[in-house]
Structure formats: structure tokens, C-alpha cells
Image 1 (cartoon, rainbow, N blue to C red):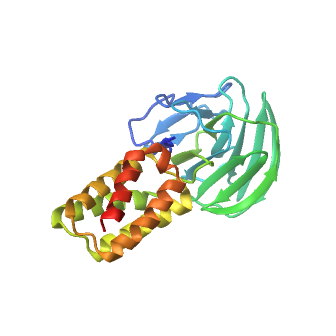
Image 2 (image 1 turned 90 degrees about the vertical axis):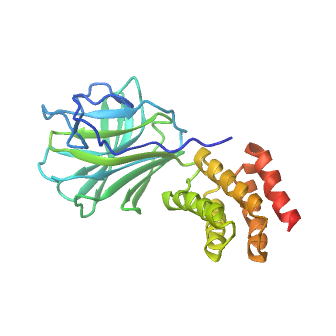
Length: 284
């Protein structure tokens, strides 16, 4: 099965009050807005929360967002959320506060409980992430885990965010399933360049060999093939077939790529591509 691409939103569009499109206001939420290419809390300084309506994530999921200025005002609280209900005020959230604190909070049918207060220096530009995996909740700041806690109150739901007070601002939101870590943007961007290079020169250079090695490592690390990555691998294979000039280095790398591709589900999802990869090795 091909995993869907992880959703993102940079909010770079016209001001909107309330926010719409792929976002829905949660139960009892004020009008969360888009202001100056950022997502903002309600102008009336009330409670604001939204969930992502364009996809249904797995139960094990993560949500993250970047804090934007100003980090001020004792009423401001904002951050990403997971397992958000579409019908009730129920979710887990990691909200930043102005006094260098992240609160790990759960809402169950409108009742708020602070699970943990995490004291850590905060600044505009910090990325806050919350993960829910089984009954384990994890909070991260800039990719570093700052807390882990067990709670089994909420089993499933959507990705989301909470923004309280009109000074609350978030940006560059991302959601993902934890069942697959995903391919990084740098790897996804490298493949089209590699394919273009092969097509333009009709040969495979050392840099292409390094690219294949990097792709193999990425597949082994993430164990996931997105639809975009599959298309890029297919284009790369097409160019490899067209060159008729596969060096020994490339031939040695292809079996490792095949093993990684198969481990990530490629053998089932893309049998034609697997056969072509195997044929390249056989021909060499």
C-alpha cells in the first residue's frame, strides 16, 4: 500500500476569518484566522482550536508547528494537537506559554487536564511537536524530545492546533503518521536532479552513484515509499535503462536499493518497478 504524502500548511495566502479550506473549527472554538501568512488565535481573545479535515490519520500520529512572535501575554497559549475529535472538545495538545513553558494537555469532552508542565526556554522560530503512539505521548522542541508520558484517555482523532488569544501565532504546520517516518524533502528533491543529469549526459557519474547510495539509506531508515517517491524512482529507473552504461559501482548499489525498496513495500506496491530494477542487475 502506498502511504499518502504527509500534509503540510504554511498559511501563505490571503487573510481569512475564520480559517476554512482544509481546516475546521473544533467544538466551542472561536474564529481561528489567517493573518499575514500565519495562523492566529481569535480576534476576540478567546479559545481557538482547529482540526485538519482533508485526511484521516492513523491512531499513532504526530503534529508540529513553528512558533511565531510575539511570545508575550499571559493569556497566550498555542501549539500543535493530535487525536482531535470532530464532534467534541477532545484532543491532546502541546501548547507553548510565554513563561518558557510547554503544557502537555488533554481535553476530554470539554474537561481540560494539564498532564505535565515542561519548563524550557522558548523563542519565536522554535518548532513544537507532539506525538501520540499507543498510550505514549511525546513532546519535542526543535527535534529534541523534552518529555514523554503515558495516557490512554484518547485513542484516535485528527491532527490539529490550539491557539488562545489574538497574539497567538503559528506557522509551517505538518502532520504525519508514526507508522512510517517518511522520506525527507532533501532526498525527494535529489532524485529529480539525478534523473535529469542521467538523461542529459546519457551516462552515470560518481555523483549519481552517491545519490543512489543516499536513496538506499533513506529507504532503509524510513521504510516508507510515498507516491511521489515511487514516481521519482520509476523515472530514475527509466533513465538507467536508457543509458545502457551502468558502471560496476552502480551495479553494486542496485541490489542494496532493491532490498530497501522491497523492505519498504515496493515489491508488493510496484511489481513492475521491481522487475525492472532486477533486470538492470541481471543485465549487468
